[in-house]
Image 1 (cartoon, rainbow, N blue to C red):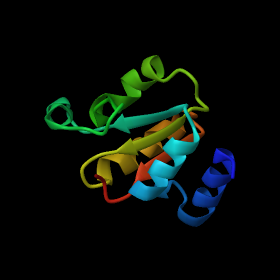
Image 2: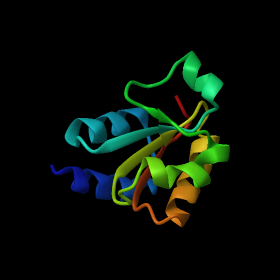
Image 3: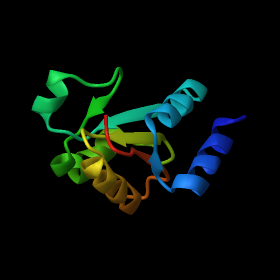
Image 4: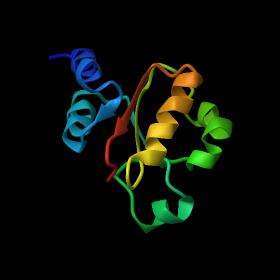
Length: 107
């Protein structure tokens, strides 16, 4: 199954919300995935997912376009409870990013 098919299946079922296991599946099937940690810098420095980049939610709108230039990049946003990352997905969609997901309930 191609990664785009996986994405379509997930979108159909969950909209932009995915589980940790679904995020692993997307990452394993595609090299061009950005894990976006939208927690504070302090939270990020205390521990984060491997290869994640940190743009705190309150800085996202101002900084994301300089960090993630390709609007078709698959972006998986996460935070500690899924609330900030859900807001991040809305911001990213407003900025015309087309493949954005939220790890529901956080990590």
